Image (cartoon, rainbow, N blue to C red):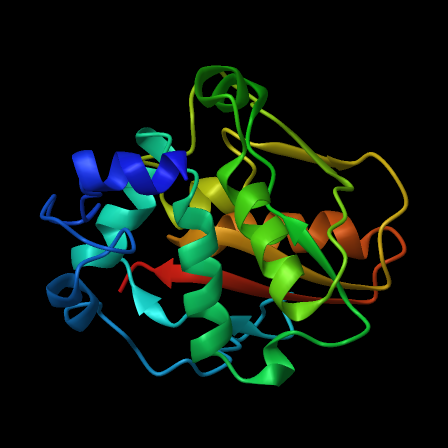
Length: 209
């Protein structure tokens, strides 16, 4: 009741263009979402069995990611999860796997008050009926973030250290908002495969072209 009254007084805005929108994204921006063929890619030498990413990190998709991460628009996690489920084939979410969010650093958690990848994983869990597990722990190896680092630096572990703090599932699906170089996903997969996990795939909302 209160939500409806507030929407009448102050109509919700589109997070991409800031125009009035009924569901956080106006029809114009929905039509401009940069969909790409959601094929399961497997690069040579990768530890991931599959990686699904249906959107390019540009236009309205980039604005949604930034709104979630930098403007505390946590309700967008539900919209992004629905878009993932609607665009990806069922085999992207193996029925015997667990969803594992790529963990944020403790610095980012303190700054934002939430883990965006975990929010996305929780919303996906409700839609695909898979459990969310959180075995990964992340610490900065040096006093900087991963932003601006190239793939080779990220793969070497520069700026990132991961550990498995509890028992890992046999099959894991890593969940994150953006795949930039793929190095963070590889480091997460490596940490899991060193423990009980035998198969790791990944689902990200979008990828850098």
